[in-house]
Length: 467
Image (tube, rainbow, N blue to C red; front, side, top):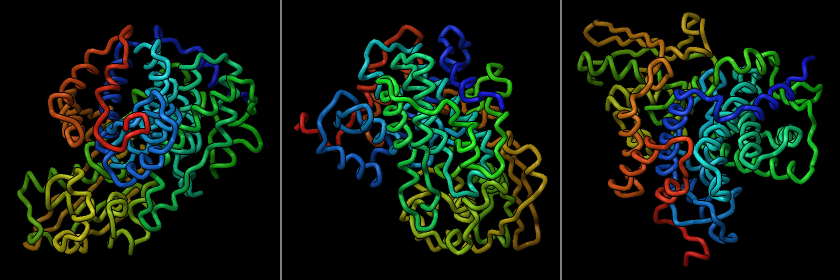
C-alpha cells in the first residue's frame, strides 16, 4: 500500500505561505472571524465556564482564554477555546468530512501564536490551512457514515491529526518530527457520540481536547519522541480501526490540486449541520407563504442517512428534547422553531424554548423520512427536501441543494460580520466587536496578530496573576 501517512504529512510540511492563492488567505480570514464570534459567545455557556473554572487554579501563562480575563498555557488555552467554540453549534463545517475543523485548528494556532509572537499572519494562515487539509482528508477517507456507526465524532478523532500538523508547522518541526507528531496523535484520537444519549456536554469538549493533544503531540515529537509512520494505513492504524469501510486512497487523491479549507462551510443556524438545509427550506416557505402553526397539518422532512442517527434517533428523545443539547440534535425541534420563529439562532435553541408548549405541539406534526434522491451527491452536497400540508389541503414543497453558508451559497462578508457581532457583543462592547471585524478584514500576510487576540478577552474567571 502507498505510504499515505508520509505522503500527506510531507505535503503538509512543504506547504508554504507563498503557495497560497489570495482567495485561500481570504477564506481563512472569513473562517477566523467566524471562529472568534462563536468562541466568544460560547465562552458564556455553562459547559465552557466549567472548563474555565478548572483552569482558574492552574499556573498562569501567556495565552488568552477567549471571552475571559484568564491567561494560561497554550495547551489549556487551546482546550478552553476549542470547547467554547463548539458549544453553541455555530462553528464551521467541512461537509465531505463531516467535521468542524476551525474549532480545532484556530484554537491550536492562536494559542501558539501568542506564545511565539514572531509568528506573523502568513505563517499562521498556512499552518491553519495545512491542519484543515489533513483533518478533512482523513475524515473523508474514513467515510463519515461508517465512522459515526462505530460511535465516533470525526471533529475529535480526525481533528487531532490536523492540530498536530498545525502545531508542528508553527513550532517549525522537521519533516520527520511532523510525521512522528501525527503518529503520536493517532494514540490520542478519541471522541464518543454517547453524549447523544442524555444531552451531555462531552461533544463540546472534543475540539478542545483535539487541539490540546495536537500541541502535546508536536511538543513530544520536537523532543525526539517517536510515533508510528504508518498511523493511517497500517494494519492497526487509524483508518482500519475507526471505520468499517475506509477508503485510504482518498487521503492523497488529487493532493495539492484544491485545498479543503475552500470546501468548508459556515453555519447560520445554532444546531447540527445535518439540520441546516431543512431549516433553510422551512424558513423560506414560512416567510414566503406567511404560514402559521395553526394552519399546518403535516410537515415532511427528508433527512440525509448519515445524519439520521444524530438528529432523528432515538425517536422518543428527538421528539421530547429535555435541554439545549437535545434540541440542537433534534430535527423535529429544529423544524418546529424554523416554522414558528422563522429563525434558528441561539435564542431558539435554549433550555427555555425547549419547554415551549407551542413548539412541542408543532413537533407532533413533523414526519421524518429518508429519500434516496437527496443521497446521490452526498457528502459533496448536503441537500434537503421538505413538504408542508395545510389544514385547508394546500401543499408547499421546497428542495435545497446548497444550504446557506455552503461554499456554493456563501455568506457575504457583511453577513459574516453581522453574525460575528451578534455573537461577540454578548461578551464585549459593540465598538470593540466592530474593531475586531476591521482588524481581521485588514489582516495581511506580514501583519502581527497579538492585538487581535487581546481584543477577544472579556470579563470572567481570572487567573491567579489577574487577582
